[in-house]
Each structure stands twice: as C-alpha cells, then as structure tokens.
Length: 253
Image (cartoon, rainbow, N blue to C red; front, side):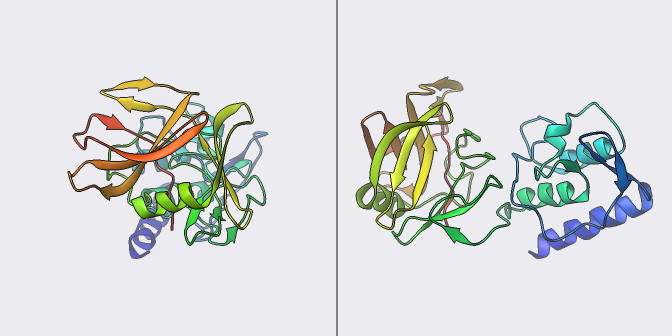
C-alpha cells in the first residue's frame, strides 16, 4: 500500500504541475473538469496495458493522460481502464493498482459474479477464494496473459489446485463463445477457466481445446506444478521449470 500511495502522490504532483486544468474525456467526446486521483478504483479493471507494448508501467499512465488531453493515438477503449465510460484520473489510479499488484478493488467474496464489473473474488466453499478472471484479463472468458513460472505472485499452491480438482465438480462448456472448464464448488460457487492453450518455446498451442495454468509450487524434482484442463478431463501435474513454458494464472487469496 505504501508503494501505491507514493505513486499516487507522484502522479498527482506531475499532473498538478504539468497538466493543471486538463479535462477528462468521455466516450462521446465531451469534456469535464479533471478530478483529484481517488484511492477508490472501480472494479472493472482491464489489462492495464494501455499502449499495447506488453507491459503495465508508467508509459501506460502517460497514454491515459494523452487521451485525456485529446490524443487519438491510443484507443479510448484501452485508456478506459476501469470501464466506466470515461477516461480520467481514476483510470490512472487503476493502472497504478495493477502496477503494484492491487488490481482487485472489490474484496468481497461471492459465489458468482454479481455484475459485469470484473474482477470479483469467488468462494467455492473449499477454503480458498478464486478470482473470476485470469491474470491480465478483464472478463472470465478473456485469456489474459501467458507467464513464466513464478512471474505472478498470486498463483495458487498445488494444494489449492488439488482442492479445486478433488472437491469441485468439473464441466467442459462454452461461455460467451469461449471453450473452457467450469468448476462448481460444494457451496454452489462457480468459476470458468478459458481454454486458452499454452505457450511452449514461443509458440502458442491448443487454443480452444485445452488450458494450462501455473501453480506456485515446485515438486520434489524442482519442476513447476500446473493445472491442465481439456474436454472431458482435468488434472494437476508438472512441467520443466526451464523457462520454455508460459502458462496462464488464475489468482487466489
């Protein structure tokens, strides 16, 4: 939290000094006075990669500011990070949340997403809260990013994956046109994991047919444990931890 506060203060000072009076932009092109950066960010966090360079960093903050100033070099949809239909300082705050790993503004737990303002935390009744979206995704059906093992700190442990597999029912289904697996917990809570394939040695495989997700656990051979799902089956196993594989991550807390 201290890191986020420092970033917020820094951005506030920069905007006050350099873009004082800058107007925020609405989708219709109307402008209204810019607001002070808020610590309360809307729930609908997009990927945060506003400029599309594959990273979430200060360049994305600059891209949001450029759209607020009227630039069309960056798409409005990308700059509207929190999905509220406007591009303003709350989108800057949303980017900062993602930069410091605090992208989930809604800390409540649900058994299903209560609205379209993702992400949400889902309680399956198995002792762990699972996020409704993949890391880097803004909807449950979105693939999100592909990461090397250990790159995302909020990945589930192998024991948490075992509980998901052993204590929940599994159904292969299609949700909003995307194939994937639906896990239903003993309390009726549900999450959907899209079949976004996996990356091996830089090549993407099996999109729409399978999905491979990292855990945060190394096995006794120091291989990286994972959750693999396909039509009709799902299991946990391990992959060589040598950097060749990039998988999705479904965060937990």
